[in-house]
Image (cartoon, rainbow over all chains, first blue to last red; front, side, top):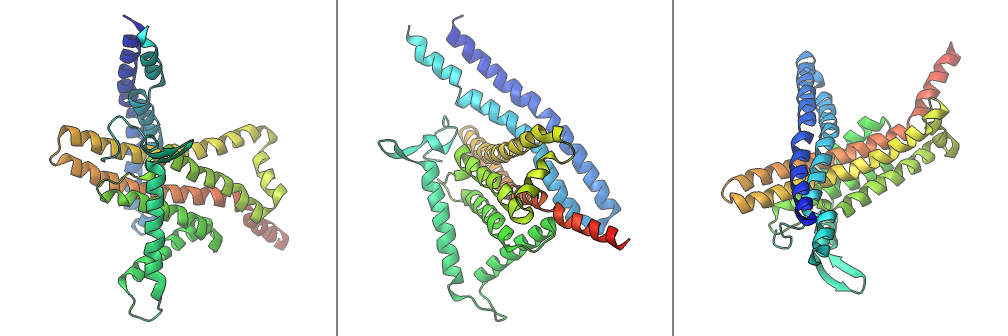
Length: 92
Length: 240
């Protein structure tokens, strides 16, 4: 198997693994955050706006890790420097 | 989505016109379109400002926006500072409009390019010391970095740099992923699903604009707040 095939195979497999495994942690974290937020709203309904705002900010912070994994996966698929280098030097 | 193919990851790669090293790419064109839309729109609306009871609906819209931003900013910073509103409000409005204009077909959001989001995050990174020094003085601001102990200095600096990077990548990743998913679904199942993903992309755009502005406000106020608290503490201890 030559290097171009290996690089393509490695990029595709790791792109899938990156986003697949990378989305597990944030999803679990967001579920727990929303559950806690709902419990707080049930305990103190007049503070709903503050709780909701803090909840959204917290969710965005947790979401960031999933976004990092997604960006790495996109780079592997669309803007892969190793693939570009291999394709350029594949003529020989 | 006519200008960007499925292979392009960022509007920077779509070059309309090039002369030497000056490249007019899609990011620049759409940034100027967003800026023209905001400036011309608000100029037209505020040409006849009135403070009577019956105001036009567009002036009402602008008042709701400004009032809402003012309320959020004063709640976070616990002080009434107009300069915070100008900076953070501009950030919020620019990101909001550039994400909401995704409704228009053939439009590419300038925030889907890492250049735009990195520039916005750099603005926040520079503004935090500026506001901090304006409210606490030069040494007061620098003393914050060695705050619990002097060994925390590298961690504080690293934290500052990494949260700026996180701001840029968070906004870029959210908007770029929304556009990419809509484009891929359009190629696969063009009937109903692209509309649903497009709606989700609009919702994410609005939430990300809010998050960006709120985080910028939190960083600025955390760098410039503790002086009033310390004055309150020392005032109380003097009374004792």
